[in-house]
Length: 452
Ligand code: UDX
Image (cartoon, rainbow, N blue to C red; front, side):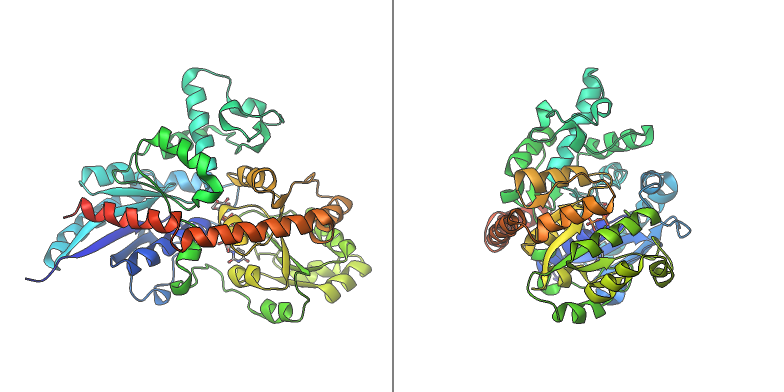
């Protein structure tokens, strides 16, 4: 008799910062012997040729006119959970269950992203074991729970105190000003729905015990389902990972980095969604020029369509500084950039993927959170792990120059760099036989035990 193969169906949303960790998880679980199907949107789809061992099913409602920005990401998330997106996923799962039987396979688990919360009830209805993948920090997830709990107890909403430097009692060491901005009704409803899910097999967090031990413990108390801190996913998937970038990476910057001294370059990037306005870009250019440091700067095409035209508008000395010490690309191979010996600091929006990628390479961060979980991550970087600079965040050239020099030149930055290297080593140990390695084995065991 032919042995039955075990297939996992993974459901990511069409956001770069969520799709990438889901594909990394898929890569890891494929190495553990599972067959993989990725059910994804028509929009911002992964490239199947990069993953020849996976099956890809483009399914959800076509959002192809949508350019995802920090302003519409919440509405797009809400749309992804409406019937027009969820029904095709459900129909496809029914179809896949039937076809699996014919092919001596079994769908053993559905793994969905935290923002695709509607899949929770679909999996239950179809009696499929399920897991949610959370792509933010465990500490950030705790803030969502705190929001909802306060609401249910009739306490003043957390967002009323958003500017306060006071510590949030149940979330120390976070201050009110570090909390994610949940200022719209749609956003608050969405958060309540994402944390209400109770996937039968538990929650995978893309984090590491040594970074967030206390938060993971607290998270377990509130979820009361298994928590699997299997991270950093990109590091575990490293040897087998392919590019999941929506945009082509510009490798010319690696050649540029090759000619720069060790730890002499500041890498500047705000991830896939956040951006600066044109006026702010000019201040950034002047601040970077005045700092006298080398810099590699990602300016995405949605931020500014014609960079050369914009460069012409800058003061002459700034243009000269950019030509001498700067490199500007539309999209960088971030993994390679952070691992490059020439990179000594990262000016980042503190997206969780960028945060983990930087920590794994021992690169300290000049924080500039924009939205969502990024303020929480900035607090962890600056206050808890002490590898990140918190500054005024005022987009003015003098402020920027000062912050860049704190990170790249001053003793403060050197000490952060040293701590970042220590953290890098701790994370490596967790992946190679430590806590993340154990959590992954626990997860595999758990999936197989309900499918004997
Ligand atoms: C979003 C949220 O903003 C983030 O806070 C959340 O934790 C995940 O979803 P994003 O804003 O894109 O993600 O930031 P981040 O999580 O840092 O992910 C960006 C990804 O794009 C990283 O994996 C990074 O390596 C990649 N990237 C970015 C590139 O490959 N090249 C670039 O030039 C810029």
